[in-house]
Image 1 (spheres, rainbow, N blue to C red):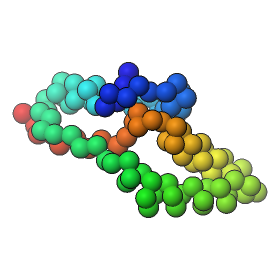
Image 2: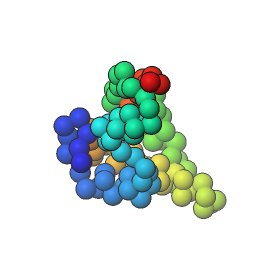
Image 3: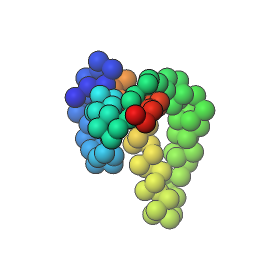
Length: 105
């Protein structure tokens, strides 16, 4: 499995299999849409900068500040967020957010 021609590192694949098991490739999602009676007019991949600027660069320090929180649910959420950011940083552009413009046929 790959995304936009990039091989998916094992650590990334394992992270998403455990946390997001319904995540699929662009091609697989297009097939699902077409089988459901839609025509895919176009797709748009959110640029990497959209993940970093204004999101991970703000979220990361906030999560790290909560990593030692006394409430286990807050602490666990913070640690999972830190893990997600670490995964993104080593992902080698192997995944991203994709928007699909579809039309019912």
